[in-house]
Length: 554
Image 1 (cartoon, rainbow, N blue to C red):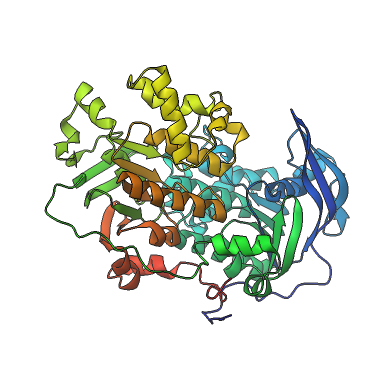
Image 2 (cartoon, helix red, strand yellow):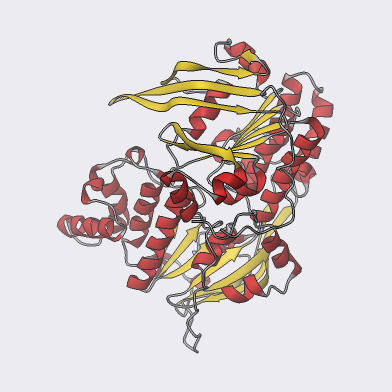
C-alpha cells in the first residue's frame, strides 16, 4: 500500500469532544409500499461530535437519505421509525413535536438537500429563500436579512450575488441553485449541518470553495457535519471518519485513512474499486488522427445572450468554436454557468444562437427549418443529467423507448417491439423491463433506459449532459463502460458535458475548457491534464480532491 502525502486538507484536524452532538442508537425505519413493508434502516448506530466531519457513504437505496430525514423529522408520510433513538445535544428529539423540530431545523441543524430543482420555490426569488431562516428564527428583520442573504450567496461561491439575490431559481444553473441551498443551510450558523450530496452538482473549483466554507464554520464555531456523499474522493479528503452503509446496515466504519487504506468489508472494497476519483490513474485514450474529412459537428463562433428577469442581459456563450469528429468523444468542462449546456443546446438547435454557425455533417443547422431540420434531427440525440426527471413516470419502459420511433413513423408495431428488445439488450437490461415503470427502476437502470431511447433512431451523435453525476460510483463505472462499448460497436460520437474531471479523464479523446462563455483551452485529453497552458485549467485541475490514500487502493 502506497501512502502519499499531499498538502493537509482543511479538515481532519478537529479533536472530538467527549459528548457527541448527534447520537443515533439502533435506529430502525420502514416504509409502507404497495407490496408491503420495506425496511430502510435496520439498527443503525452512529455519533457525530462537535467540530467533526463524518462521511456517510453507500449506494442509492442504502438508507443514507432516510437517516438524514429521520434526524430532522422530514420522513415521508409512508415512513415510520420502529425502533431506536435520536439525540441532539444530549436531548432525545425523535419523539418531539413537529413544532419543536421546526425550531431546531435551520437554527441549530442546517440541511442541504440533494436536488435543488425540487427544493427551491420556483416562484420566490432566491434571496428571499436564503433570508427566510433568518427571519423565521428572528435573527434579522426582513431588510437586514436581505443584505445578509447577498453575503451568504457570495460566501457560497455565487458570482454577482446582488444580481442572483433577485433572480428566480429557473434563471440559475443547477450548480448555482445548489449553492443557494448551501447558503440557506448556513444562514443561521447551525451547530450541525447535514449535507446530502452537497457538491454532486458542482464543479471541482466551486465544490472546493463550498467545502472550504464548511471547514471554516467548523474551525470558527465547532460546527459538526454529517456529509452524505457518493464521491469517495471528497469523503477521503474532508472527513475525519467514514461510515459505510449498505442495505440499511453499517458494514464498516472508522477513521478515514484506515477505512480507505485497509478496507475490510467486500462492499467497501467494491465501492473503492468503482470510484473514478480514487482508482489508479490509467492510460489516456489515444485519439484517432484527425484527417481532412468533414467533421460530424462544427460549431463556429456562436454567441448567445439571455435577458435577465431582474433587468439587463447575461452573456451565456461568447464566441465558442470547436469540431467533433466521427467516433470521438469531446468533453466540455468548466464551472456551472460557464456556458456548457447552452452551447450543447445550440449545437442541437434547441436554442438559436444570436450569431455564428453550427454545421452537422456538412449541413448548416442554423439555416434549416421545418421538414429538413426534422429529418436531420434523427441523427443527434441527448441524454440528460437527471434520470429521475427525464422519463415520464406514467409510461412503461417499452413505451418510453418506442416514443421516438412512433414520432418519426419508423416501422410497424411488430418492428418497433423488436427494436425495443434490441435496444434493451444493447444497454444490458432484461427484456421484461419493457413492462416496468420508471418508479420500479434504480437510478442506473433509468439512465440505461434514457440511453436506449436516445439510440432508438440510430443516431450518429449523442449529447451527454452530466449523464453520470446523479449516480453512485459503482453505477457510474457501469454506465461509462456501457458508453465505451456502444461507441465502439456503433461508431458513435459523444459531446460529453461534465464537471467531474475524473470522469472526463476516463472517457474523453479531446477536452475543451469553458469559462464565462468562452473556450479558454482545448486539446487531447493527455495534453490538457498533463500540460495545461491556461491558468483557469490549472485551477480546475488543482481543485480535484487529492486524498492521502488515493494511490494503491485495492
